[in-house]
Image: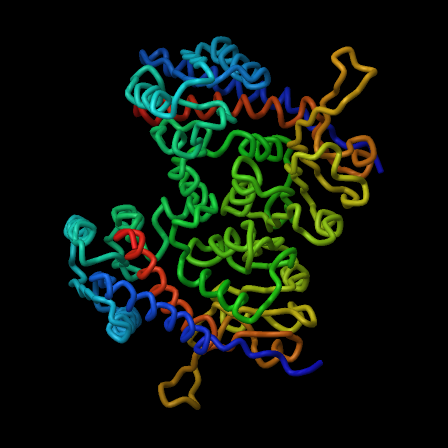
Length: 296
Length: 296
């Protein structure tokens, strides 16, 4: 087989961001600036890193950025009040609360408090339902939306394709499945959701024309679980110890890249695959929210 | 192979209804009577038949039944007002609008108007989301809930089983898939959703340990699309012309029963399979709504 196409998430993310920039310029010419509020409770280092990346990207694109870093002791009621204020802030079109919050916070109740029109993470029940109902006014969660965009960007045929989604979370697995089984372009796939309880998992994933791995286990998918000529999208971002690295660890996906890649028609690397798409789709959702709210 | 088990929907529905009767007796002993309102717009004969069956079942069980048969000219606003009144009626715990309404009615907007706590059809976005989020306080649409109950009633192992759902509607296919991929008993399945755009459909359905046919095409599933020893649940209710019948037609499922049944471990007949379960689960949802609303 010839070498697989390496699906370049950084480059595709740049295309998405360029589209956002054009739309932001258009909105600004009409006197509207999109705004995104990112709320962080507590100072978890990974969360702090993600929140700052999101704010930086906003600034780069000219999106009004509100970054709220609240103390870990913030109460449920205080956080609900923060959300209400952001719901009512006309300069804010998108709101997200960085996950996971501290254990004393009821995350589902916080998400339900966000105005669905500003729910750019796509986790509010109204947006979950819109995805199931194929209502395009809703917000699709950023990671599945990014995976779908990678497939369309690389001209990968999804109609009638066997898509196997490995993992059934509400963040990736389920929305990914709903997205790919919907009617229309970039979708219309035959979708299988496999997970930790699936029997003979390799036999199931080996049926995939397009395998989307979102199970959160480092290098879980081996060559034996992948069909020759498959397209593999690796959602995993896992830290594994690595004494040879200065920081003592390296980041790997859910796919054992070195052994799987040679079998693939196309594959995403980790890092540089799905990762950059997630933040790009967040920016795109924020621009969409702004347009819908302001009627532009 | 030995003869397949015939999955008896009438008998299983009777079990569900007997459970409902016990719960209704308990509620009545506390001074509470569950109430179900069924709204019909226009006089479509099939819809009229369904609505009257539902009312009759309510009366049989001692559920307070409100049957509103509105003229076909009823406007959207008039219908919304009817829903609002039912939302505010403390004697009504369940509300359903018989589908399909006349073409001038925006059905999605009507469903969205129903108080989610009274949405016993499980079609309101809040309940769609609760199903995806595996929140047991929601209402599962009656037909998928009935299919799942048939499986558990007959002791069919679902954990790790390959479930293929044929059809991707919001009434059956998608909720059925979400239900079977959820965590827990009677679920935990590996779920594939196949549909009209699926390539080599028979090869896909032939992988099913449990095949749930909800594609709405008479006798569409042939023996070649079914694995030896599969369990087949036939959701289809299709009329086909039949001059040998007094009424000029007969009812068949989505499965070519005569050729498929000999390959099966178990199969539902049509009629007498899924059909009776749908109305039984509607009664169960009404009792559940009443209990949740009244805190019993």
